[in-house]
Amino acid sequence: MSALSPEALVALDGIADHQRQRTSRIASVLGNRLGSSALDYAVAHHLLEGAEHAARARDADRLAWYRRTTVRDLTHLSAGPHIVLSPRPADLLRSEISETAYYLVGPDSTPAPREAHGLARAALASASEHGFGTLLTQHAPVICLLDRRRLDETLHSWALTRLPGTVFTDYTAHPEVLARDLIHEAAHNWLNDALAAHNVRLPAEVAFFSPWRATTRPVYGFLHACWAFSLTVLYTRQVRRDASEAVVPFLDAYLRQQENLLASVADSLAQALPYLSAAMLRDHVDRAVNRALQQA
Image (cartoon, rainbow, N blue to C red; front, side):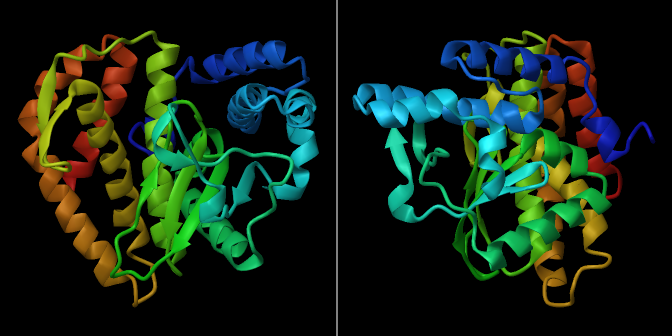
């Protein structure tokens, strides 16, 4: 494995142990028998949040479902190490845990339609072919496909700290674009797990200008952007070589934009990196950005 390969960039000691320990604690709270996989870790947080919602609503049957369910009960939703869902807008929730909408796996969850499921499989295969399979298996095992859009429409995607391992994203007919956005959100989940695993606390009062948001952001958000966009640049640069003719101009425009934005934050990144007190983590972020810029 090359020291600068995508697999090497996301191979960080401590993350797997953090996921297992967190899953074990949630299983103890719920009283069920969760396993130790990344999918168990992601599902555990859905079960915990769902149980809290059910308890507040005094819905005993739903609470019982969340307390007894394990990944083995959700095989009808799964595609190997991933669960792929396509929640309806009416099923999305809003609460104090998130400024954005989200969805929780529940007793009434159904698999994504065949077409969406097939697109997700193709996107996962593309990511894996180009070195990002481990990232998506470990940090995007639950995929919620939202609205299908055209390439000329704005695509929205996000991840929540309270639901690690889950990605919410719009999608197009092109698996390369879906893979790019899955990698972006999985990168956010990876960094959150890495910060927790290495007990890194980033100061809220330190901020840097983020060209992606055209505003000043806390060092936490700034570093997240640098890391996530670096990985999507690395993937896009590879996949455009064998992508369909219809999507290559879209990918090329994305590459030019992100390479320019990453180049513009080089000085700020040098000031921000020391706030990552774990040397290994600091090195991974630094290497990812440098590699993304090397061929720009």
